[in-house]
Image (cartoon, rainbow, N blue to C red):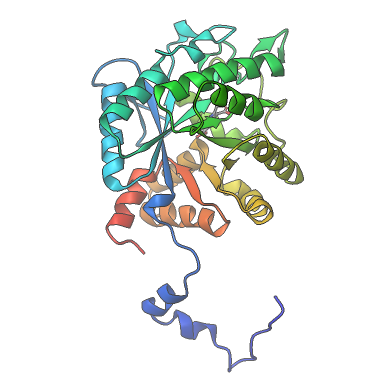
Length: 335
Ligand code: PBG
């Protein structure tokens, strides 16, 4: 900052805060419904839902219910819904073949939502963990998560998701070389307009715990994900990963988790000026809901304040389990 404010009392910052109209006038960042991506969990069955204990208010939904949820989200003006499947443990294998089955749960859900709800874009997740008997995002051989063989599997998975109608492919696996391979796979299969939102800077975080309950990966996971997800102490590495993924054909990039990594969002946006998103992950949601549920925090206010923080940090949008609740408040004129 080169300009120093006038000395008191010429400068009184409280003048501009004295009325809500003036506060609105000088507000630099705002949250809108257009900023929201809603992650949902799908499961097999019909007209059924299962509460996820570690994520109060969130349920796994059967496809028919997911279609209704998508209709509701579209009605609220949410632009994107993101699908995560709860895969029957009996379908999990070492090589994760279910991941690229054109009729797997995720692809059936995509088709059903696509057919019934034209007014919402669909994002799907690319990583092997829901299908992996080991719970890892990549194929495990002799205790090692093998990179290049995993990338081949991810390309098959990507093309199957695009064929089902996914508008945004979200690789969350953190293998090296995946974006270039996936982009080539999409081009080769005729999906020139399928976008990639790369989980470019995904940290090896303990805030993913409730999500792993939701997709049924907690029990399966052996060890941790530190050989492929980033060390929480790094930010320069995040910039190198973003540069790499953009060069390989990503349309958008993500930082994950969100609230503990807003510094990374800020650095990414300033350096690259590309569409930048953050994932307010399951543990962040659980943490807020726990305090809200105890009456320790005002739910509406902390939800909106936490989401506005992402905008201030430079994000163009946020993946958040609060999306419908936040959209309702915004549509009701929340400021
Ligand atoms: C799987 C994946 C994870 C999340 C999104 N995709 C979990 C993980 O990497 O273990 C986490 C989302 C959340 O915690 O809300 N690749």
